[in-house]
Length: 405
Image (tube, rainbow, N blue to C red; front, side):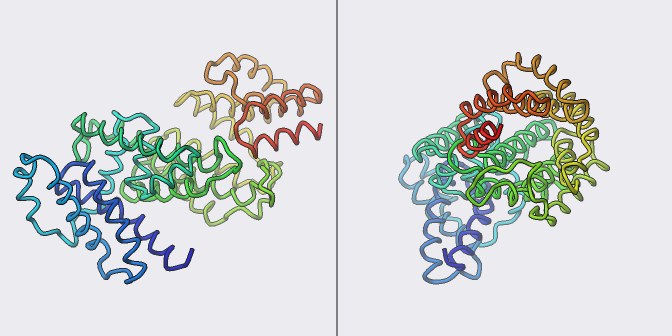
């Protein structure tokens, strides 16, 4: 990809939510506006490569999208044409106001609680992230038609529920912000550790999650959980360069070359979480970011403050108990009080329906058995974990651990 082409794609991705938000605010009708913006983006991708980027790219996109939306409306019923004739005759505004607020409102709309999480993810990546349906499908390793159906159903659901393009009320806001954070968290996690396929990372997803969360933080700078999620992403992604071998194999945290970690991202993440913990009510994303910060600040695996990590997990399981919190806390417990303590609690935790059959339970058990000196038990558990994961890099890593034993 040429540098100019890449610059155009990055610009289009940045402008997508601003133009779509302005169009919906002016005309209403999320579905038709989103279709019009997508066609404007396609036109820009072709024309800007040959003619160059216009002086006012935002206004160019808004003008083309407005014209296309008018064409779409002219193909609808006579009643709609009459009702919207005035709006269709209004000249497009080359610089729609409140683009920042529009982007935030659009993000909240895409994460409307009436939608399922998978629909929220797909619609957010399409409408706010600016990714094409094909790009989203490739990232999640599903057919393009499947993603297209999810996006179509999400737009229909928004229309049928009568959801409006407006900022939520103060009473609605906490739930809506929480929904956005959850969607961004899901996108990042799938990018950082792909749930299936041959690659451990899908960088396009984790990078997009960081970009969108950074924008969200810019719009809600005093929200501690928004800052906490951004810090968590930065502190986690900072380790990505050291997380795979040249052949794509998984390298666990304890074996990573820490000189390859991104010190700039770590410094930014630590700054964000330090400020959030000092100035906002503590939430689960902040606690997860604090745990990541403790790992990143350790010069070596031996220097990791496991007691502090265990304390943070104790707080986290009070705020948001869940299967993965339980599992991660057990690892910290074993590092502080010994592998037998972790194995005892793991035996009870396996009864949790959320952990039943999950490969990470077997992987943790294998690790603790190995620490306890039970070589044969660890080998069996590693192999069981390898059979249960759909991630090829994780399979190879777990099988290599079993073979080494």
